[in-house]
Length: 502
Image (cartoon, helix red, strand yellow):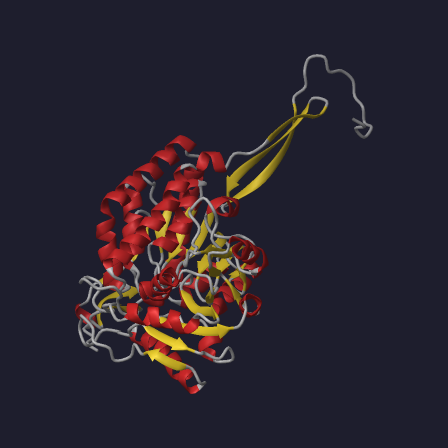
């Protein structure tokens, strides 16, 4: 692996509407996963830089909070138009640092744009309520107001979409933002912040702080940060939730997943096989809504595996800038960790139907490659089943009945997403009622809700009660005041010290 650190550009912070050059003396490499080499460095913040980013957001907040709804809406509309016209430019950045193929990167940006479009309609979603004459001459009404400085900590797998789950809504509601992206693929965050500045957002309303655990802890503990939004693995989500809550912050922390797809005997197996391929191997399986377990209700497993296997033969793994279906994994360490689960499954008795290790790829030999992998008869006691793999490894578990499949899913530690494939409407309706999972697909393999619904799971897939975007997003980024008001009219006279009796 080549490393020419001294010659590489450094991705700097974005503070107060401009690049902010780090003086911490600490950097981390940013790799091009398809080439297997570090192409740049990213600054890692120290406490002074954390304080500078938060201070910028704090100074910008009063002016942005008091900016008219009309003006805030105009800035959001302009940002939306700029992003829609230049998303190909952002997609190239995503592919160069994450490794996903360009078409997948474009899809990620499009899903993020949905939330921006939701945010442009924010005036309706931050309205208060009004009750006249609750007592004689007394009115009560509510106001929804922004929190202040809010922190967003986003993962490597969707460096554009996941930040856009949060910051457009936070900004629309009148908050200022400090975004801490993953140090593995940091450039998209700076690009988005610069684009928002170009759209007319005042300096300091969005800031980008790069770093590692020092930056994360700095936001979790900073007294001027009022809330934390996080997406990542379950252990880190729990740490984020506990640490931020201990420091008096409002928290939404979305964790990991082990998503199952229940296939009933009456399912259209061609549709099901296509769905399993798309949901299992898209974005190289590096997404919390990937299908990682196909639960086949017998006798369909053998036929379904054959159909999935045939489709896997046509998949092309390689450099995401070329005509490929699936790119590399984000780092060498993560590739090796995912590949290790194939060994674990085989040792525990699973059958490796298709092995993605050592495949031929359309890309540099040094890239972080692991091809699509299919496992059969994976024991539910194996770590390959119980743990989130976060890579292109699809497991098949065979069950004898619908009831056994539902029990298997409900007994899992996670509750992010699930799907059922069937032509039986009654079974589907029963499934959506009985399953203990937050997002459900019926003949839809990746049930990520559209922006005007909210994203989030159950159990160890979420910490805190607020999901991402949708109505939950606006609830999270605002707080309510209730005002009781009485204006005396000329007929008022006298003093009465008694308790009001209505």
